[in-house]
Image (cartoon, rainbow, N blue to C red; front, side, top):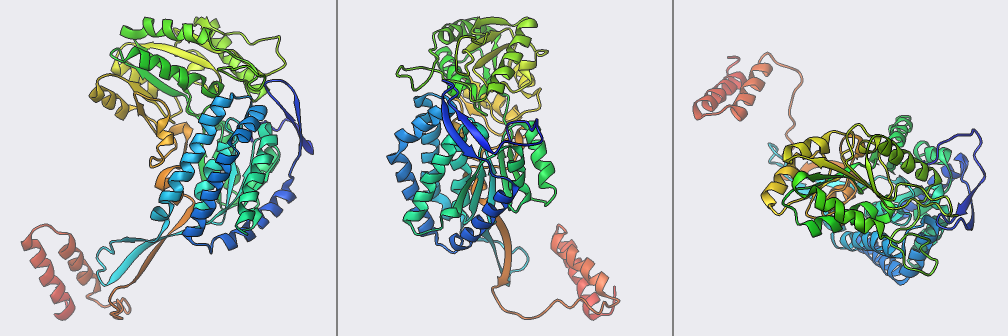
Length: 528
């Protein structure tokens, strides 16, 4: 759902283009509403088989999937680069590595968090209480284009471990590679004599994505923009389908005046320019304190000017690849030019190339950015380092929190107590201290945002359990078979109930003895 529905009639096929070269990769048929409905039905039939499997079987399937990915990692990376324009290094580190780690963690920990959980029965000591984690059925995933492999695998791994099937609507911008990744999954299922329809890829535009929501999915996992997130909620309301929304961010990276300069510079470069900035966790606002500002700006500007950009598969090593979407290049440039017009200093890049067949935007550094500039509030999603001067801790926290997003954040300081104090006050779903982005890789931690960055969590036990119906069960420890007789109501029922509540919840022995006496009188003495 990344491309606006500008026409009433959608094409029947998606033309697939390499964004770094303009080369045509092929075409993929579009799934209409009827096709989506059929695929959800097929996935539901497959899920009925899968739901009966043991955790041991699910671990074995995921283990083979991990082996299959590792065996074909080079091919997967080349497919990612051809379809998304990113570098081979980023494809390996930014897609293969996180997927492998999520699989490793899920294989080791999935059963622990999904098996029946005994809990206290509270007042009812003659009962046993437990939480059961049942699969929901068919998980509908609507994925963006920035991480074509990880965006598919990330949600389906916990979904499969929890006993669900998945229907994944991928972005039309990376339709070509998504078809190939779908085959990798089907091959893994077939090797275990499982239905190939456990994960089905659907292709298309906005109408196709909407059908994933309205035609029978039991949960929607959406990653994308805030405006499209609102559309997802509107569509989900028709059937009251629950949703998990990860809606991007405008993440702050706070560089304190006592930070290690070398550490801060290199981490900021990674946080901004990985995946050419097309990263929901990108450090989109670098907030640097006065004492270190000039030295930081000088270092990052020099490094950015020396970054190599070009087609990743052309035979030469490059640092930064292409932008997947042509429209995204326009958005990046609009925000950069607005900032320049309002007084930002351009220290690297700042102008889109006119002599390339690919979709590129140069690594750009903007210093002295101020709050009235659009680029301080709107998601750039491109290779632009936005540097704003802040005076002190309080100023940095105020600026960090002064926007509608709240996905992730970073704080750099040699004083760990200071860094933690700042981190606790940042309104975000995650904070990395003296690092960038690794909260996503630490799979025990939940992943998700607050405010306009969405709601729900994807990683860790919360992510696994989000794929389930958390069912409360209360059964017998001691079969008393003595029902609570509420009817018919007697004249003493109210007084007895009042005394019982006081007996349980009043403080002090005297109050409890008095409540007990009242309860006995109500039960046996005919009143208070």
